[in-house]
Image 1: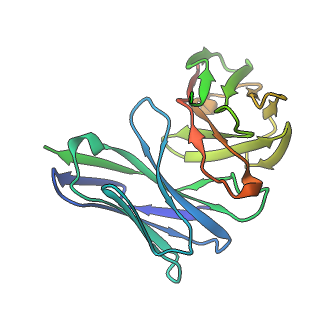
Image 2: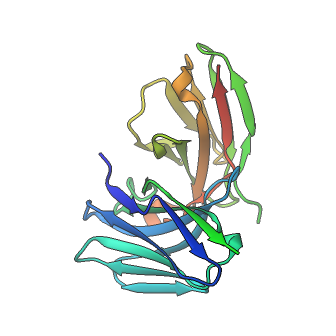
Length: 115
Length: 115
């Protein structure tokens, strides 16, 4: 059962533009929402993460917006650069000692930033 | 601080064989999780080990097993390999789920090809 749905599957933006990737979840027990960036041949790298007690978190050009009532969260990449071209995954994990390290991932978004 | 290391990086095995993959977590991290990444199924959780105990298990057959040693290093084993087991196997480490330090850091993965 897919519990985290991610869109779009692929995204092409121009250099300097804004990239927006959306995710929706079903499980209300989720309380930690990270985003990962993966380059070909590499493992996913933690980019930024948010908890449901805040609606937005910003780190440099990367911002997470979180809507708890809609059970949706999104990643915004401002001033997108060709070096940002990668696959982006949203994920979620839940409360409790035994579930905290189990990440449920979205399907991934292939981002291409044209120069 | 050194990141998560995985060995070997690449592996080619024949159907019916077994394989053992190794993961060394970030120093001080006590939780190790394993994930399988394939183009069709995406990133899927296999299992998590903490203090040498399996704390959480994903929906994979019993051919997939793992263990964790007292120094937090972990191994996963796949017996009776099938063609569908060809994937990138990722290891992730985190500090301690009980402290809600959910940040997971991934290694580069082991690319397993079953022929």
